Image (cartoon, rainbow, N blue to C red; front, side, top):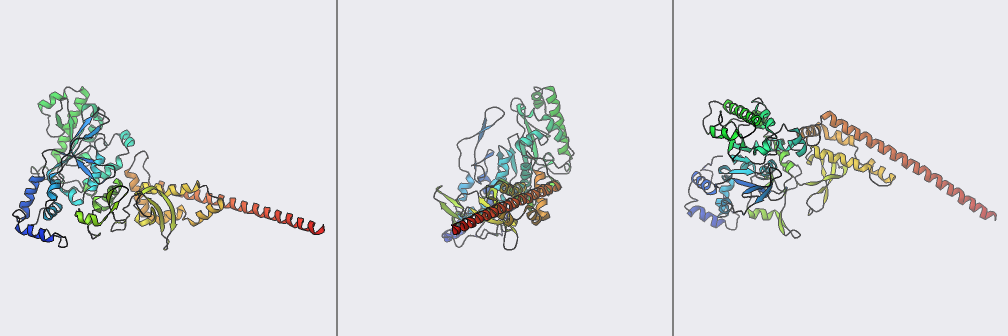
Length: 521
């Protein structure tokens, strides 16, 4: 990502102030400097003397603010309090002129020279999904300060089941795999009041083989413990532990002392075993299993799971096929409409990605299933954003991201049909016109089954893992129930028709008898 001085920043010749931008580029002493010098100056200008503590404005928002935070209350729960915030220099600087804006867009050095601190893993994952891939690639230093996360204690099964976080860990690692320049991710394990509950899990992780696919084997991971008195012990930094820190550890129970020493020794051995000939400051080579996580499938799955209003991959320029990162405010306005009910400019997000995948968020239920003109399944979905017009639409199966959530949505539609309070004659007609579960599942094919199986194997949550065979059995059972329900309705309709025919015949006989009697009289 080093700058190429011969690759000059192209100015937008269609901009109303293009002449001013050109004049600035030709006459400004600063802008006439070569790219390397300008970037060095930018790095000094945008660097902050403290950690950038990142806060998401609201859940699912792609907007983040920065500031200090402090923890109130005891070890759990934590209450985050934002203090008064100052605007970032990089924001003010990018508004100075268009060429500086283009420079900082092309070389986002703000992400390279600062340390980003996150209160929890979810915020980190959402932040990485919200920024562009280029900005992810510039990040070097991250701090994760919240301790109740499976990345720190993935062996704590009760914690994983309680928080349903194992899938989120996979999403975080997929996005972290795109941070190609990441040098250090500090994980604060908290104070004794907290890590005493997980010290056994930490020891088990530290003793795992050095080639095991676990976050603790990543070369940039740096676990830290807060000792009595506020001193910080960086696990694996030195062995034995320095004398001042050893005195602090001695204030803890003997069992905890022993485990901390064992963890530190194991982590030091792990650090020493990594590329012995590596020069100081040189980047460690990442393990192959972690490199493999930088795949389009896993990264897209991680981004979609965040359900952001506007992800980094969707920050599109005028050409929707070009993913170039942030665009100018003028371009944003061209892709925005004013929402009078909310009083804000609302950015128009493309409905589909260049690959034809659906980007708009829809509610957690499928309203209908039908065949389209080429006999492919279509699903009627309801959009989350209330201003979408129309509020629902029919979307082809190939456009919908398939995971365990959408799998349950599709099956949930079929189950909801069973509980419809509709006359049997109308309901059986609706069910006959709806593709059966068996046909939909067959149409989905092996790729759909593999996708569900993979997604379910990542996310445990409150549910156990499902194999492909178990998923197939679930659909077979659902189809059997569907056919049984159709058969019951058909019998009801047939019985109702027979009853109606008998009633009509009886009424006709009665009418005929009354007519003959009237003629006789």
